[in-house]
View (cartoon, rainbow, N blue to C red):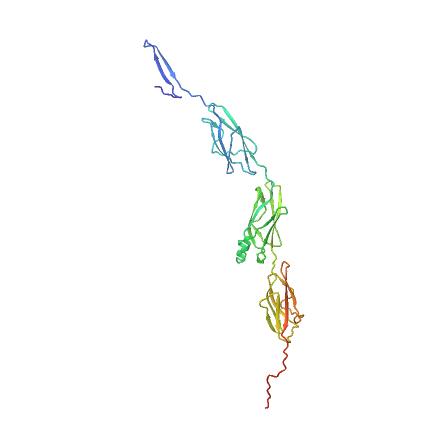
Length: 338
């Protein structure tokens, strides 16, 4: 048998019939060197995201988002058997330049070279300056107000992108103490833009919060104003009503839109003192604690309660007196004859 070896020839000595003449032969084996020099697989990890070349051609292009850092690109590759490359799988490439092809050479075992050109481009910067969402954490305001502001959890903004106004409208029952409380908030900015927002926003009915949004291109901007307001109350009722007539208190119970009091015959109603309370933020056409001097028996006096939103409720208040007694009889007589 003969051993097939690429490095060690097999020597065979041939001796002639005369037994003296000889000749040495060397039997050698060799393999034709591979001409294969293909890049079979290429993946680049660019800023933590994988980009795979598919298909692989002599000109390979990858497109990354605007602003992507390409200073440390990690390649993973496979090449033809027995070939070598001028980059190493798992060893970072730190000389990529945007839009400038980088040459990758794959050299076959027979020294034949195949050149590949890898280009990293980025998408153009977007020119959209827009707030796509806003979230305000009202938890802090609820804590400061004793937990009474639970209804704010259901308040959602109205956004007008053309005017730049973002409006939060609170229920009319919202405690006025919420004004000037600073609460955390977040903005969602569309398409890679940035904003000038602070960490917290001040809830103010008088002063909007200004936020400038800058698009990804760094040039396009949009001004936004975050506005808070409270709905005006529609409540316009007397919640308590009492008249002091000639030193006697008369309480309306229940309170209806037609309130009547009946006083003894001959009662002086020239100065009647009202005491009352109305719905929160409402106003009445008379003043509690200020005498009314124009009551006339059996003639309704109109009193109006106006809500904060301008809606009105009219009350008719009438003072009646019992009819005078018509008897002329002496019930009893007593004479002191002392």
